Length: 154
Image 1 (cartoon, rainbow, N blue to C red):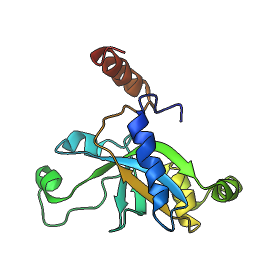
Image 2: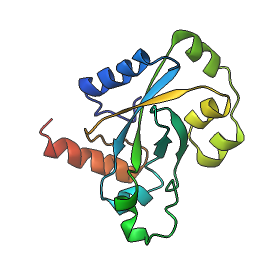
Image 3: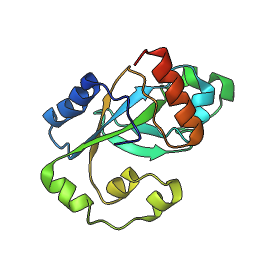
Image 4: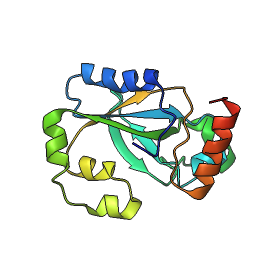
């Protein structure tokens, strides 16, 4: 997607390898947030939670899951929060189907298109990367992307 200009070839390969697993209809990427609580709390940085086989359970702009009985500052130590990176791959027949789906209540609430697919029963496998990217969705993101570009000499 155009809002993820720093995707690396290795990350594309990771997404492609998701289709080695049976049942993968759609694939995407995520990266651990690490200890950055401010980034975890940023609603412009969608979060994803996955099951034990790396299929997405839910995507949200909110911090998910809620870590009960822990002080907010300790949440990064209590759960491996994952940042969703907006690159997708689809099986051909699935791509045709998902383009025909109307927006659902979840997508409208969170403004995340992948919730349309989950709400309609599609399975999204999440590949994991450790490479940082800078998605561009806001003017602040554009400034961060320009700083990222300058720092990486590209």
